[in-house]
Length: 150
Image (cartoon, rainbow, N blue to C red):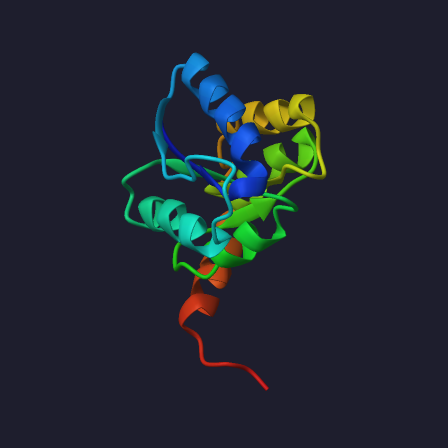
């Protein structure tokens, strides 16, 4: 698979570690920034990774910021992206199996490197189960173009 990865400054060092892990797992990696621990705005990086996923330039994405919340919110604004913020490997596995999540979001200030590595491994190893979950994905996709509800 081709994996897009990106972070803000708070996630920079964890991004570097996870980028190496993804490569060691045999996947291609495209780094969308940031390039140092100097402050950057997370929506810009999240938009790059999420856009690449939506355009199918990469198969999946990984985003990291301090809490994971900001990149998750930003990535989910892109049509076709299902970004999941996880804090442990089972959630990463279920995000793929049940929700066909295509972007993994992690909080560098909230989880340690070992847990982050285990989350990435679970996310990249798991396939979407389909079946009953397919109907739910269609319902989620319909929300992207639906007018606001009252």
